[in-house]
Length: 168
Length: 168
DNA sequence: TTAAACTTTCAGTAATTATTGAAAGTTTAA
DNA sequence: TTAAACTTTCAATAATTACTGAAAGTTTAA
Image (cartoon, rainbow over all chains, first blue to last red):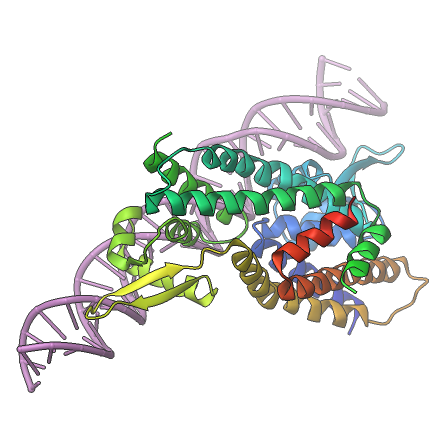
């Protein structure tokens, strides 16, 4: 396979995976493009490579910066802004985990805590079932939360080392 | 908070979380409704409770069955079909992990393996960066895959016990 | 200053995804 | 059989989400 074709495939696959996980496809594709670019790229280059408009490129890049995955760079003597993606896969995974936890898991945990505290008649099957499901999901979510917390602080090799030692 | 209100909140929260993670909001809501219902429900009841059409209810329930989260039940002497959701949170988590792995992770792993094997000139920064990113992501994805594999086979208490022992 | 080079915004539009509802299909029991 | 009770399908439509492109905004250097 040619490098050019392989790049294309990678960008497509990353975009597809992103969209399946609730991440805008274009955003995932821009990220993919930057991940395989040794040099920082300009808005112009990204627009051209992915055939997207200036507005789209601008907003997508801003989002990627908001996710902590991309940074702006400036080159001496140039007006243009350059965009560069962190290439460290473990950093990327942690960054995504961190943001999604903050944006999605935390709010849900808050609601689940509230709902776990709703009082009712344990003899009422309606209440009993509600209470059990909510409480159980809350426990699971808290476990996930704690695990993410550890992951966020961990070194990659230590993390996987421990995981696989545990599973041996 | 009233039980009725709490139920409503739970259904909303579950729907929102689902949609943020690439799962159709209605499907997540139907699942939520069934999770807090002690008894199996009919299509009719689900339509009414969530104000959705018959077609939508039917397709959504079929999807939920496809995900292994809901089962059809029949009551003696009745024509109607009843739908019942597994209430075991750990089963649910495993089932979702299993399906998403099959549907999304596996195909991506296949592509990453292919792309990891693309040959090129290591002196070419374009190739070197592509190769490093793809190889690193492939390694991470494989670790996730192995971990899921263990999780799918594990008992809940053992799983979290090991996780938290490891993080101590 | 000012005008060229560049970035940001956002109303309008396009593309995608989800939903409806009525018709077609199926099953059951009399 | 047949007709009532129920389920499934899917074309049409609605709702949501993403994208465009041109105008407005900003920065820089002469």
